[in-house]
Image (cartoon, rainbow, N blue to C red; front, top):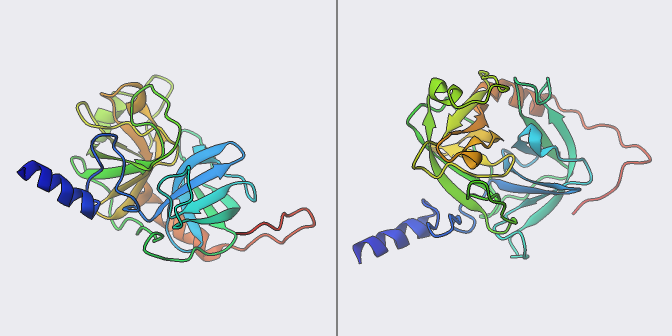
Length: 254
């Protein structure tokens, strides 16, 4: 009875995922964004009313990709969503090299903040080995198995030190300072969706880069280490100039 009560309390607070299917408590991650359309199906994190952070792998397409905010079940309309087209995508250069995997997504109109749609703070520090973080996305949490996106999933992972992570890399992959790894044997370290969001102590610390933990559950997965990109992210937002519309620019907004 005590265990059951604890599970109910944790579930109501959104502190832990529902263990049976690792489904998040609905709308407990109001910064989570579902990016979809033109073949895209990935995650991102809302950082202010105009901007989303995701990985290079996500590769949204302006005026073709839709950013759905306030989502939980992507197969139905729950009345909490805001569907807004992507207006622009800015990649960190060099694009998806061994060095970086990061993209900034600008919306065609600002998000409206509600209890279901809220930004997540950028990191004020870097994550530390042993720290427990939460990863969320609409991907499969079962290694080597595809699941069609439906409910937002949540897993809890420990940050691992760089050396431990590098030792799991295949020969073709090189470690860079822009990476941070999380997950280890006997933890739920698989979230198979590009741009899945890692939050540590209430701060955005990563977007998923390589899903090593989904091919081998004993290996950590790799995330873009966002704490070292703060200056670049804020610089993009501070100096952004919208491109001039052309006759071929679609006029699509929701």
